[in-house]
Image 1 (spheres, rainbow, N blue to C red):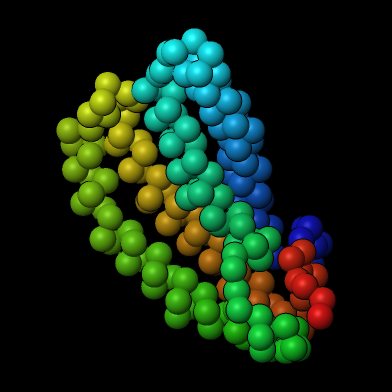
Image 2: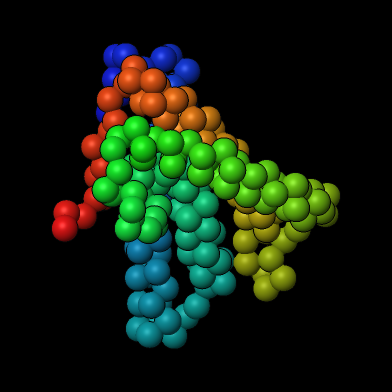
Length: 182
């Protein structure tokens, strides 16, 4: 899904934000692998361990999972049951995506934001630290919940704009990168 000159500026901007965040955070996978490898070598070759390094893997995993969710949505990489969807026309698919975004994605993201706000706020109010002497920034880890919501809502707006344009025939439907041919 590359930028199209016929896309409105807002849509291109939203996609650009999602793309930049996703590509930047995706590099954490490589770093996470290297740190995990170092943890294993330290433990089994030298009998040493580091709580900070172990927790850093958890933080990076959380960042990849939560902060790349919007990027995954942009590239239609989330799991979907395609029994009927794949046989539909581009406009039919756009309608399903539009309704799913309006009635599932946005309400669920708002629910997560509302129900987790106090949880994150409480963590910030005490500057929550690791109980095990690890990374002294649990409040940042918990903040990723709200960051995920914000990024998913940004991409939801982009999805709504794109799907409306497809339904109106003003934008071609993107070619799915993940569709299986049967």
